[in-house]
Length: 482
Image (cartoon, rainbow, N blue to C red; front, side):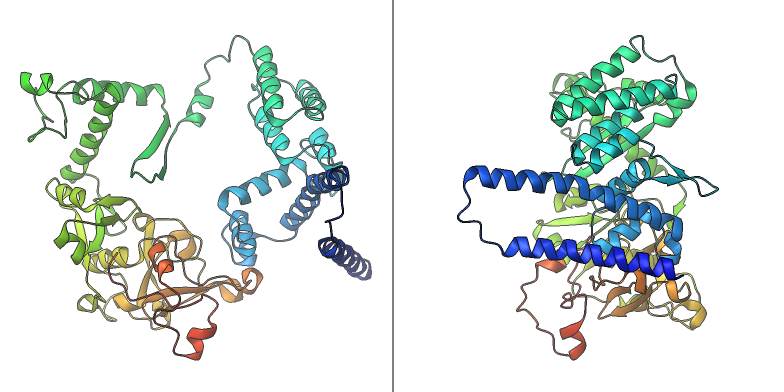
């Protein structure tokens, strides 16, 4: 116990000296330094910045052996890093991957083991390569064919690290690509398990012009199905939104075929829209979190009346009002309209634990998605959470006391002293982290309702002591509609 305490004191003292050295450097004047002296100082800082991640990885790897995310009040290590240090999910994933590949390891019996990428770890610890080099090296080793043995893999890593010592990431990537080609010139034999592991479809974030890029790795079966569907629905004259009455079933007229000016890619897109529309209109997709699978859009009465503005779906997609109105003619979608309403007409007091479909629609419209700060799960993937007080403790199933939460976050509430706590303050769900994750960050999730952050700071100033000092900042405005 004494030795462990002494080690902790030494580590804390060393980090304090490192911070003090930084503060001393920041206080030094640099106006008299010449270009050669400035470059020399920057060289030293660059080397140090390349070395410091090695210490973070060592500490993070050790932390993962000492505790578990749930013991800290989180559902994953990614969340621990995101919440405590306010970083993005991608950066948290990168740091975890760095720790897994580059930090020293221990066997089940406690014996020390080398990192998974020993040559890369050594070069990083010496400040000879930067994070971009590390990313290229990891990607290259991950893409090695399964037939490559461990000895060849280790030698390839050493060779590429040697190359990285003298070139930038772009040149290193070119060299790595050539080495991968030489290792597997004929390509890998068809492997069903590898093919299944690579399957997937991804829709990127919505761009400023409203479009979203979608990519997919299709299995042979998936490709065959789309080939057949596109052969019919993506043909000239089919599913053309420019037609007054688009042809979806049957055969298009010759006029529809002749007037079709779309590219093949545009026809395939319109066919996908038609396939999704047919699936929703068929009503055979079952239910999602208590509601029929359909599109839920929230907007304002003012936008509907003026035919301007936008609506937002339960998944977070922004749709122009004219498209919202047009979509209403194709299927029975839910449209939640706000005009400074609280949804009080939908109140359902303590008569049942499960929220009604009408309440779910209103919560989707009000919250937009999971209300826990930092969570990006949209309304379609959320459950109804008793935010003011848990049902088991006497909480009310009243729309004003409920909020949306994804399943994982919903289960993190009230888990002894390690759990999160929630409250509804002025119609907004606030989350208080457990002590291990509480660094004074915002208690409100603005991801699904960023417009709340656009309110000028002088509007409706705090009128109570709680409002003035709340960690989440000023209260959001009344729900005018979103």
